[in-house]
Image (cartoon, rainbow, N blue to C red; front, side, top):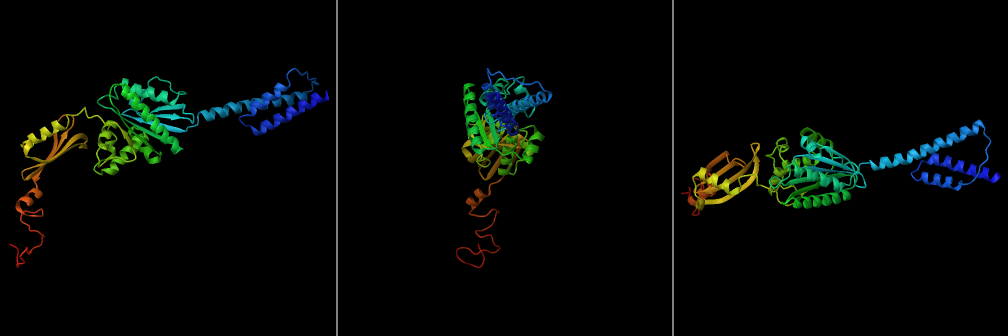
Length: 363
């Protein structure tokens, strides 16, 4: 009897220690103690205070069990990283450290269409990415005409962020290739801040798209962030392909589609016809896609004869939205031996220049 009472006392003491510690592995120790008591008949005097004592121990056991599962629940729902996908639909996937989906958040109405009635909580990240990109393909948001998508990753561990950036981008590349056309994937890691969050909330986009827009505007101060926010990722990708505006912190694979537009050759044809200039007389021809006057345009520049020409041509309709033509000073100077940009100046642009023969006034 003494041995049994001593064993009971030992178990009670260990339970008290367990209550104080409340650690995740406490349940295993309690169950182990209980296993030791199997088959042992314990004779106890039914006293009121003893009942209260064991009622307290039972309550402690319940607290411990609840703590174990509560701790696991907190761990499973702890945010480790956010993976943002932008096309025109903008969605954010939140995952835990095991890359299980905690939540999927739509940032705009198109995002809500993409998510639909899919229940993605608890799935693996790759499953969620496949489902969301597949839905974008099905709904026509990604196609041969609009083939670009932006992947942005935000999390506490930069090494993990970069790994997820590369893995998700590669996976999306493969999904789009399976759709029968080449995709264009932009990707980056970001650090969310209050300014980005406010801008993103204002325009119904992710912080990732907000960062890309701000970076493009920094590269090209003729662009306003409020206007860029209304562009699709494919349009932003086309702008980003320009060397002037290219954002170095953004990785890019594939080429943004321009199949929605009239094309460079058609834009050239429209500009030359308007100028009344034949192709063989054109010098220094340049043409690139740009965003001007709130529309995507082909910005066409060339020289012919003694004049230079500039045109902004609506990339969708072919309408000339702006034009300018003026005397080409460089061509005039070369032809009339005048190095500076006024009509009658000499080599050094002072009031009375001396020429090569050092006479009083230049002739």
